[in-house]
Image (cartoon, rainbow, N blue to C red):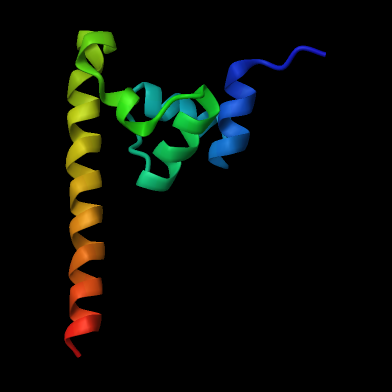
Length: 87
């Protein structure tokens, strides 16, 4: 039985095909965990999703938005860790 790549991606990312479609069309933005699951389903590293040489120009704005969201998420986590150790 042949399984489509999108079926593997949505299963590993624990998302619906509708959500994946909305991500592709720029209607929804995935969390860093979802990005990790998508990358895993595609068999690549998360950073590979952001390689400019392989990214079609029409996806640049969407990927730039992902970069901002990931940076903000990392910063929040680091702030929380720092605060926890500070107390």
